[in-house]
Image 1 (cartoon, rainbow, N blue to C red):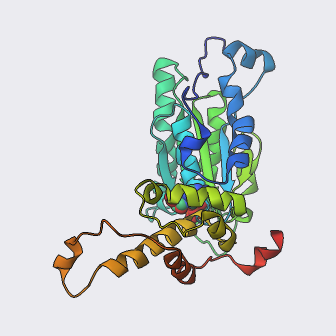
Image 2 (cartoon, rainbow, N blue to C red):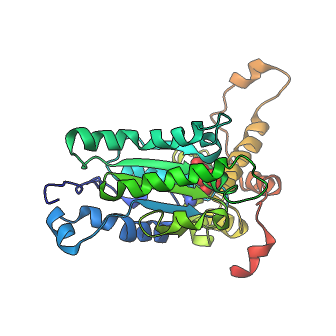
Image 3 (cartoon, rainbow, N blue to C red):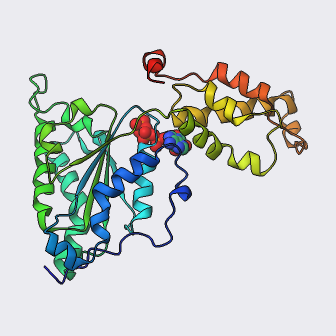
Length: 299
Ligand code: ATP
């Protein structure tokens, strides 16, 4: 196995701050330490340590917290070929037998590359969104077709089959970790499990900065908008909801400048348009967090 070249996969010019992800530094460095660090060791050290590279990660947590964003960026950070992204409901197919085939196909490019060229240096990432969808039915009496069962089994077989394959990384995602089949979470499978929760205040400030970067750069934001204040007012907002908040504030500002009685008016000069604090206050009324109240005590 000494001839294997499964290292040098991290982009040399990679920087955390370039990822456009706010408030998930700890999560990212945990993923890095637990799942990728071994991949940048020299191959002979990997052999000496007897390390098996991590093949699977599970990202779990509420909707809109940046799991998909993170999975895609991991693909960019590692020298991966374009990740294959598929969701649980997409895998499940109304034609019997097709679902297993869909799973099998996901692994094909990486397996082929290794079979034909013995090359493991190019990482293949498989992103499985809404992974719970294929697990839910496993063993459940209400599922007469047993489709979920066989799909999970096929996935397990494929993951175990890649035991010696170092060029595959699977990233599973779910809002409901408790629905994920235990068998999928064992060592050698989706063994690194990272919770991606709602951002805290400093995380929210980072996310607000990311989503207002453009309007700040173009000086479309008024001087009375205080990003620190917004971070404190957005308790329980997810990253996606913060993005929605900024959009909503822009729409209030835009609304002051246009008259809807004529489409031609839309082309009028809006170069003096500014998004004010007041627009953000209106937006806070319009865009509310889905997961409120219950998590209040955690901050
Ligand atoms: P779901 O569970 O619903 O699939 P998710 O956790 O995968 O949600 P994303 O699809 O990654 O959430 O987030 C949706 C959008 O929200 C992103 O494209 C981004 O614009 C914004 N967003 C979410 N979280 C963050 C974050 N931590 N930093 C910056 N932007 C974020």
